[in-house]
Every structure is written in C-alpha cells, then in structure tokens.
Length: 337
Image (tube, rainbow, N blue to C red; front, side, top):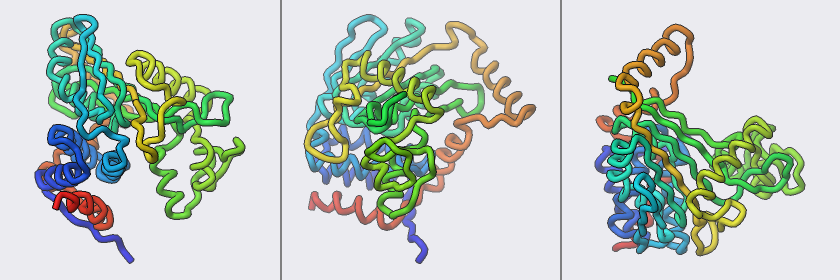
C-alpha cells in the first residue's frame, strides 16, 4: 500500500507545528522558534531534522527532558563573545534571542562567537550558519549531544554524531552550505531501519560487543561508527571540544539520553560568525566566480544549492508530510482542547 501524503502551505505548516508544540506544553516563544526551524529544515530537505524530529521534541516536552518554561540566560564575557545558558530548553530559542547581537558584533569586530550550554539537541545545525550567510557573514557551527558513536580505538559510544556546519554568502546565488556529521550515517537512519526490521550497510555500526554488524537493532545497542575511521573520530573529538568544551556543556559521555528519562541532555552549541567584507570587499563576488568555475568547469558538486532551491520552492508550493506523521503530531495539538 502506497503511503499517503498531506500538503501544507508554508504558513499552515508553521501554524501546525506551533499548535503541536503549545499542546505539548512549550511556551509561545519556544513554539515560534522551533516551528520556524522545523519548517525551514523540512523545506530544505525532508529528512530526520524536520517534522520527523519534531516528534522527539514533543515527546521530550511532555516527559520533561525539555524545560517548557525555559528562559535563556545570557552573559557577554568579552566584547565579541556571547554565552547563553539555555535553561534546559531548546537550542534554537537561545540562539534566536542572541542572533541580532551576534551579527552586529561580527560586523563591528570582524568576528564574534556564540557559545550555549544546557540545551536539548540542536536540530538542523546548518540552519544556524545558513542564517548568518543570509546576513553576509561566514558561519561555522559545532554541536554535541548524548554519546552515540565510538571513538578512535574504542568500541563503546563516546561522542554524539557531532556535526560540523559551514556556510558562506555568494553574490546573487545560493550560499555555500556544508552540514555533515562525524558519523558514517545519521542516527535516525539506523533508528528507522531498526523500527522496520531492515538491515543496515556494513561500516555503519558495531554491536554491544564491538563487532561490526548489519543488524540495526544490534547497532542500537552498540555504537555508531565515525566516517573515515580514525580521521572521522578525530573530527568528532574536535567538535566535542568546540561545542561542549568551550561552552561548558555536558561532554557527550555525560549527556542524558534525548529519547528517555526526564533530564535534558545539556548539549553544547558553538557558532562563529565572521564578516568577510572586512577582509575582502569582493569576497561574495570572488566566491560566486570560484564556485561557478568548480561546478561548470570541473563538475564539482556545490553543497547548498539544492537546499536553497528547495526552500524557495516550498515557500510558494508548500511542503508534504506523510499522513501517519501528521496524525502523530496532531495528537499533541489536541492536548490543548
């Protein structure tokens, strides 16, 4: 039987997400922040960071893993530094509240850094730097969460998927956007395969004894693997230091599970914003020309173009969601009745 889909306009999709979040107990500010991020993520690429991941947030709000009354607390330890305690809430709200000041500081000082701790997982990491690129800034972001992947020489999970995201603006075109995890695949793909009883490719994970496995359920009890072996694991460690070390967040080994219990993972998020125009006034033109040379003359895939185009299409055409997912999310909205 083919899966049924339901279409939403862009505005209706946000309203749908807000209603579900309010039904799960989120504050209006939290609901608005996460709804925007969810819809944009799903529009760019309907993967595990869009509405399917919203279910994790909704479940966590009800269970208490997300503080629904969180009020992010900000300090500025130096002129170009912003530090935020997310108060056990969502990462997106703390970043949204500091976003305008972060961009202003980057334009004033050439570079500015945002560091946040004590939050739920960060969602689509590329969203944070994509928004900076829209403001003419180069962005670099790192985040962590509960341990899921093994380190170099380890058979037990010690890091989260620890993604790294980068974005840069170019003249009259899609921002360059690179958003990739340190793991060989996304955690959600293994979780979905386990739910369907399907195998996973070799090289994605090990079982609880540290042996390679293609059994998704065994992988859920074991550890994911980093891409590229030790090199990918080293990048995961670098991200861990940037995200948790600099911000004061939980190390992945110390982060509570984001799918069970009633404690926040206490994740970290570090975002660096750079004003390229202060270094080279022609940066956006030069980058546009270089990306065109790479793609047109050498056949290089330029990350970010397809997501930029998909987001623009979705603003006019809306988005489509599986009916089963819509029903699951709608159940939270009905809690307000």
